[in-house]
Image (cartoon, rainbow, N blue to C red; front, side, top):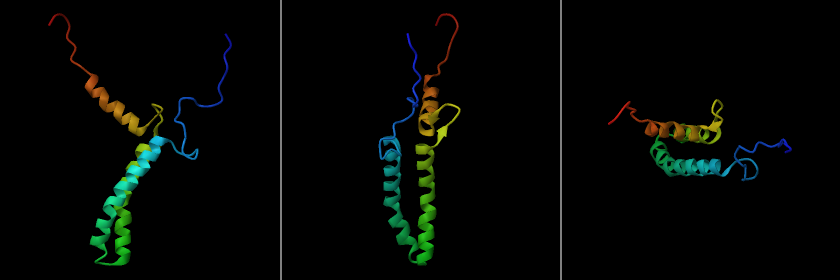
Length: 107
């Protein structure tokens, strides 16, 4: 039987959207953008009473944590395990439910 080497990484995600990002990453970007879009008008309304520049800075600072989580879960890989960070966390938390109490002998 002949063996052929494949020049492409068959285990990685397919970059289907413009050849740049995958569907999973696009869902993270849309979800994070929608979440930021939902609370930024509230931050703008509260902070615009003080100063225009202060309101812009407050909006940018309040969007940083959501953007950081989107980038962390969507785009960073856990190199040791060869999986993205969100899948790694799901796998790690499911492991706790799979451990059991093992007894020797009869019940």
